[in-house]
Structures are given as structure tokens and as C-alpha cells.
Length: 363
Image 1 (cartoon, rainbow, N blue to C red):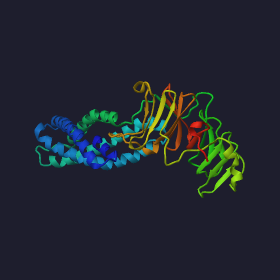
Image 2: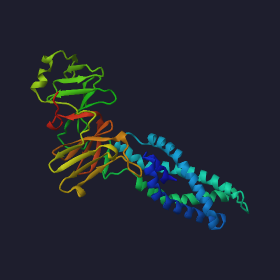
Image 3: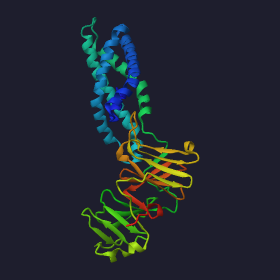
């Protein structure tokens, strides 16, 4: 029974699940019992009314079986679904189909076992072929109706038209992005069209500040010691105030506090908002026409549409005169083409900045 397990998959408080469950599960249970009893009545040549109770009991057992099956499906989904937005949405339908088939198989086996026990005391006895044909047909019929409805109700919410694995389509000239590579922890640079990728500091970087022309970088490692470095040069430990004088005389830029997301950014009459917490998603819209212009992107499968935090959205910032929006999603940086409603991955990276006043921070 695929619908009940999705409530538990949301990980919500059990009391809330129970309240929502009554409203949803009762009509669904009535539908399934009616459909399955009707088909079994014709297949097994048994009156409809005597079948209602055993079919209801069988569905209750398959309801319980949906909980461990949900755990199995979660593991399969983790294997099937990539950790980037383009791959995730490209394969989401496949993962949903595989998950539905697993639920169907488990449902057939569990309900079959329950109904077989009930049929032992019935006369005349059924052949195994007729028995399993009835169980398979009855459950396939109910799933044919409920599985598409389940998919439509639980799929992640977005109205992006296209996801791409790169951003070669980005506006020119592209914007330069400074970021920390999540795999190597090196400080790197790349442009919004994916070009001119290079390493600025080939060492572990936890936090950093750069001057506007990138000729000086002040960074700290995991040991808390701060170092000065020129791109491509050797890093030297910060010694005294003289070493920091260039940072006081020039515009400097660094990432925001990791504990505090940048949730919004504006450009003209456009606004980008990365909702924090359990409603996490990215929303970009024109303030004078929010409903029609809104671009919504969330990775929030399930009835309650709670977010998958491995794709947590944060730090939206407009570039290209408001035509594009950069944002963080999990350990990667993405670019949104507003007019085309297109999202592409720039690179794997965290703690990104642009050399613009919007991301300035004093040392």
C-alpha cells in the first residue's frame, strides 16, 4: 500500500500522521476493499459480501508491511537518484516506478498469505492458479488507479522547464565565482559558464577573505591558523598587523557565516528567496507580478513535501543584470536562467562568493 508508507516517509510527528491518515486512508481503504473484493468475487466465484472482511484484514496487513518496505525503497532510491539536481529529476520517475513495483510485489505476497489462510476453511477449494490470478488482478487494478495519483501527490514541487549538467548556455560575459571544493577543500575559482576553472589555494581551506583583484588571499585551515597567500604562490603564516595592511586598504570579500544562510537577494523588481527550515525551497519572482512570474524549485517528495536537506537551497544572488540567479544547493553551485526557466550545475562547491558589493565582508 504505497500511500500509507509515504506518510511515515515524511518523518513527521506520529500524531500529525494519524490525523492526516484518517482523512486520506479511510477513503483509499474503502476504494481498495471495494475494487479488490469485486475482482476476487468474479475470479474466485465467491459472493462479494463474504469477501469484504478478509480483504480488509489483508489490506491492513499490507499497510503494516508498507513501513519496512518504505525503508527498503529509501535505500534503493539513494542508489538510483544522483546527488545533483539534473540527475535527480531525470531519474525521479524511474525511482518512483521501481518503488511502486516493490510495494506492489510486497502487497501481493502479504495479502495473498492473509487471504490463503482465510480460504483454507472455504468450500470448494481454489486451485493455486486461480487464487494467485485473483490476487494479482485485484491488486494490479487498485494500483493502476492509486499509483498515478500517489505519484502526482508526492513528487517534488517545481516549475523549472529544463535541468542541465553544465552551464555552457550562461550569459556573457560570465561572472567569476570563488568557492571551496567540497572534495579537496581547496579554494578555487570558476566562471558562471563553467569556464576557466583554476585552483587558487591548493591547501585545506575552512574560511577565507580575498581582495577585489585576487592578488591576496587570507585563509584559515582546520587548525585555526590564518595564512596569507598569493594565487599560485606559497602560503605564509600571518605574523603581525603589517601583513594585514593591504586588507584594510582595499575592498575585500568573503563567504557569509556558515551558520546563517543568506536567504534573499533582489535585483530591480525581481526577488530571490531561499526558504529556510522545513519549508526549504528556492523561489524567484517579480515583486509586481509574483503569481505569474514565480519560479519555484524544491526537492521535497512525499505527501507533506518536507525537504530533502542534502539539496538544501541557500545563498541566492542575481547576476547578469538580473537575468540569472546563482544559488547553493547542497554541496554544489547552480545557475538559474530566469527567462528560460532553466537550471544548470556550475560546479561542486560551497562557501561561494562573487566579487561584488552584495557579498562583501570586512575582515
